[in-house]
Figure 1 (cartoon, rainbow, N blue to C red):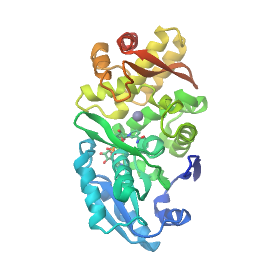
Figure 2: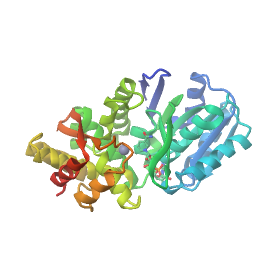
Figure 3: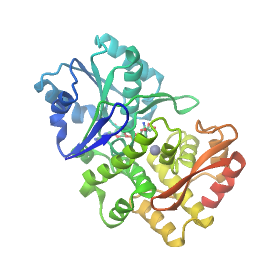
Figure 4: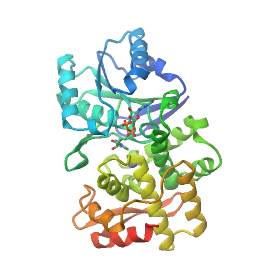
Length: 351
Ligand SMILES: NC(=O)c1ccc[n+]([C@@H]2O[C@H](COP(=O)([O-])OP(=O)(O)OC[C@H]3O[C@@H](n4cnc5c(N)ncnc54)[C@H](O)[C@@H]3O)[C@@H](O)[C@H]2O)c1
Ligand SMILES: [Zn+2]
């Protein structure tokens, strides 16, 4: 079992280990959680883990209620958020009670948002059950729902009280969903972890989820503790994400986030090579690593389509946009580009 402390003003631990779902009550008591627990999870995760979690919590003396919504990104909207808030109210939750997100990034993002909004903020706990949620979305306190105009356009920052990641839950993930998480793992390795990068090249993370997740959480924790509200260095975590967001949007969100990130990493890697920032051997290593995990490196959309769509990204600042460029493993930097330079950048990165 690993424990990683996230050093934000209200610091918290991310606990990672095999079979630790059954110990959830102990972890909640450690951080002083009392009162009622409202568990939110989706329709795929509920039959797999909800009963086990509720039994463990009841055995630990907690009173629980649960809310299940239809699985999928289509549910990450204001309607479901409203249903969750109404559920909290109907369950009589007060400010001393706690919400628990049991599931992937969709569940975590909505539960966090609802917790931040309900009665102006109640505490919440993340129990990630996808690789993506374990390495990325459950840490750092960003929450959101999608609006018709685009993804994650409404949200707030709220840090969880504790994150409990039972690596055994990843065993039931479909291959493609596991691969989505691998895209964020590879992104993290490129950003700041040469040892992880080499480990991924050599072995299979499925045999060593605890190591892979711990390394990613430690990296994200360092970045988030320096820049909780994404005013500077936290922007690095968006490596590959500008083209990725365009791919997601152009596909009508049928390309999942992780697959789109893999394409974005492919584009930023090839463009780095074209600009002379990296050599051919590193380009090949990164592209091969993405492909090793059955992820795509090539976008089905043209650089013009990607750039035009990026123009509407929420991360745009006036007429410019920040992109993250790769100069080496553990050596990426933020560059502000004028909107008309973005298409040229993507053109260099399109195969
Ligand atoms: N807040 C952040 O910082 C942040 C960062 C990255 C991504 N995100 C968000 O996260 C979301 C994507 O997360 P995701 O990929 O986890 O999506 P998800 O929550 O939809 O989960 C993917 C699929 O896996 C299923 N599932 C979850 N756990 C399972 C398990 N253990 N066994 C079997 N099936 C399981 C779900 O039901 C779903 O069908 C996006 O909405 C994205 O915007 C947020
Ligand atoms: Zn991402």
